[in-house]
Length: 67
Length: 67
Image (cartoon, rainbow over all chains, first blue to last red):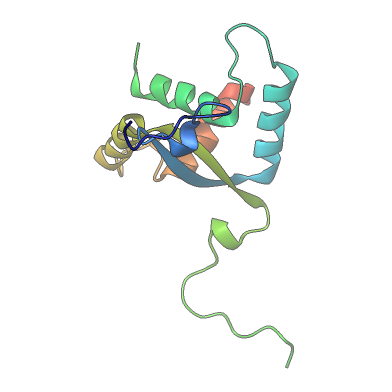
């Protein structure tokens, strides 16, 4: 037996994943409202981001010119 | 004399602007590092965002299909 306790419940998320970092930004409220609306409206459609973090990662990769 | 003190120093920023909202996301560390590098590397060039908040707003507007 090691020091790792048996994991219960759902798997660890991005918040506790050391490969992820919390980023903070200030954007216009109205812009953010429209973004949240679009994410919710398109939820479940193929190729659409499921949450704000995923959207952000997608957009940043594109900005960097990643394949 | 009102209750408003005379403002000194620099003007209020996005953090205290009620039209702006703080947003938080979790993105891969390595991705964020490369984004910060690119922002710094292109600093001062025409048409480039000056900070992460500005970049984010630009990318989100584009995602929404704003002109």
